[in-house]
Amino acid sequence: MHDKTIFKICSVTTIIGLVGIIFLTGYVNPEQLKIEDIDKSKIDNQVEVHATIQSIHNTKSQTRIITIADDTTSINLVIFPTTINVIELNKGDRIIVVAKVTEYNGQLELILEDSSKIQHI
Image (tube, rainbow, N blue to C red):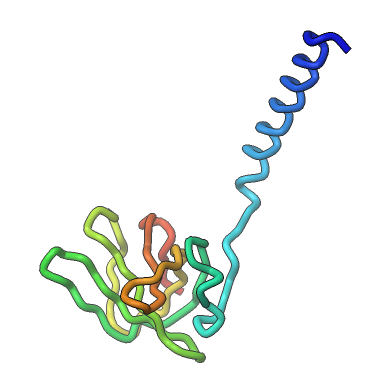
């Protein structure tokens, strides 16, 4: 084949692939897990958790560390001050949260990166 023909085939294939990825991105949902099922294999992945707020702690830097629990165990949900417009949260609230799994000081935790990814049940 000629180089121009190969280039055209590659270009068309690339465009079709990119359009497909953009179209399908809206259909990819984070994995819904019980807290006990969150392990190191989930680090850097988004997960969805249904839980109850057990405690809320604000650090000096205004980072909120919220302990959430389901019927299996508990985990810390961290909300940095740069995450704006977070809904009002209180101890005992039932929430659904989509957050990124990370590890800090040997403990797994969830990081809320988008304030629209937390809601009351």
